Length: 145
Ligand code: IDP
Ligand code: MG
Image (cartoon, rainbow, N blue to C red; front, side, top):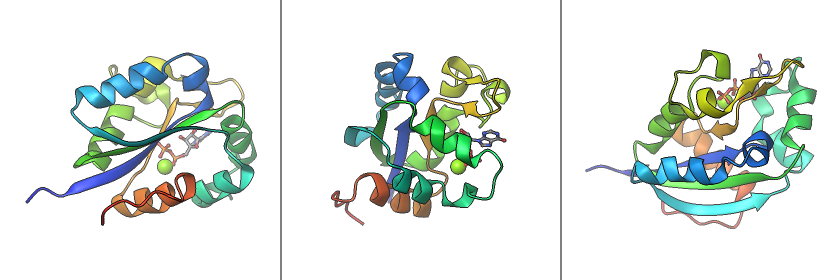
């Protein structure tokens, strides 16, 4: 049978500032996915260091942390069949300049002069990482296994 998966979407500060929260939620709902949790969050440095633990050695890491604290973010847990892969497809390539037209990052993102990619959304890249990341942003949420 088809198994329900969960993924984490973060709408980054640029997505909130440019008023694309509603449009992004609408795109997710149009695909018939279920919103399992939703919250406006002021990301702490500790949360971001855990979330981006695989990026600590990258030269852009300090700017990435700064960018993610430029304003509030929205945390969204999305549920559905194959949702991890499909939501990543909807987000598009990491660099908005490389993303396919019609994806969230191509439509609303931009490569910034300081080199940090203002790419509007985070999406989990695997079921295991989704579980790990959901714990960081929604520690009280108990999802069925
Ligand atoms: P992803 O968000 O598409 O999974 P990752 O490689 O996991 O991409 O990188 C996490 C975030 O770090 C990106 O979404 C982007 O905001 C930023 N980033 C990634 N690579 C670069 C880079 O080469 N320069 C500047 N920022 C980057
Ligand atoms: Mg990633």
